[in-house]
Length: 242
Length: 364
Image 1 (cartoon, rainbow over the protein chains, first blue to last red):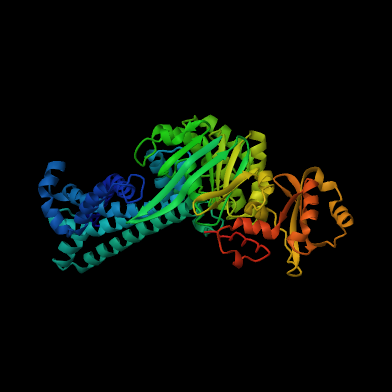
Image 2: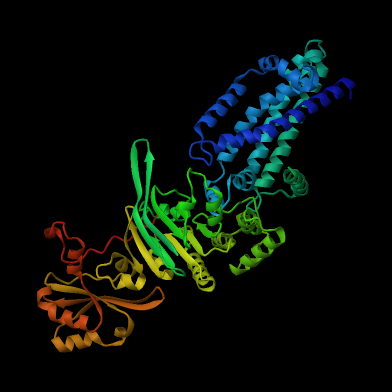
């Protein structure tokens, strides 16, 4: 593999990994808060809900390139630099948090209200409902949301090349397109396709495994069973640890 | 055990107000199975949710096991620690089971114990013991998705018992189940009631449920309790709608010039040959329109609908004779007239129209 391709692959993985990490870290609380402050929900609070909703909407409506530029002073404040892969992680994360938060909100909305009522009837408080009912029950949908976010971030990371973020998207553009290295461009694009496909496949496997828990009709293909079990245990382990 | 006084719940949506509960006074004695029956929309679901304050009543009080929950609750819609502690000792089972699909059966039963901060080993011991009690010891590691409806409800019951409750609230617990499973779940509730001295309040739209296991019952209509009492009291109440529903006897009169009498036998009167005595003493021809023996609330009860020739005025003496024998006698037309005083008497049919059977609401 060319060193150029190798370095840029690492850059992409670096940016996507860290921005996803922060998107999940901050997006889950924001999504939970959005859900719980909704009308008729546990912590119904119209003001908080509307303000938070407005912030999320503003974050989501920014074109990513503009967001990067607007955030330059903030990025410098947080990570010390505003360029390179490290500098790109901040705007990527800022763009992904509201995106992921909305997905979390939607995932939590699908949790049966009867389960919340049952937990309340047992004497459970808000924390119990969040950590023992809402999040575990929404786990398959949350994993699907992470998958979508990762793939979106792979796309966004190409734009991060504008601030010298590097990465595969940038490689395809600067070397492949601008310097007429068509074969490099094609290689890069193919690699991106493979990357996205792998992420989607892995995400789907986990989701199906989680959602299929205990259903007699769970369509488990024998060939994938072993793989799925190990994947399942791995993810469950990290979730438990978190 | 459970007392509500003047329980009222008004829902406001925009400027429309809907009164779901309208001054409900309920008295549930310790150790009894108490059924609240009514059509959908009668307010029974709101009522049971008010008993553990899942719904905040607009006014009125709820006292469970000597604790005034409405006073505990404090202000605001969120449950404070005192109310949550009280709730953890009131079990509740639901129509749609409300089990967490992400947890195994055992972990579902452990959830209330986790809330009570019971340590891991004790949780596990207690959960397995409860699963054994409901007959699901072998399903501890299964997920709810692998169970049948009846099994899920057993898990729901085991979970409801985890906090060692004195009171179990059952919200249409059998309405999503088939008749056979319904019977086995009701049997389980009955056993728990006897073995653990558990007070059970259940709401249902199925008269059969009340008939099978309830010691007492209340009939709800439009947010009010219109009749309540022990099953025996209800059956002994002339013109009681619940009694008629609990124990219907059919049969249409053969002509206009007849008196239809419903006779209820219970206790020692049931063994005496009153009908032949009546026929011999007064030389009347008696037609039997309908009759049934049944077990209601664990007691053998017989009911018979007979027809005497002639109008009520001509039959005062034979009817008096039946009453003297210690039987409960309802003269159909008279009972109906008493039921509907104030309405146009001319419109009253001579024979009561059997109350429309309670509408079976489809499982939601």
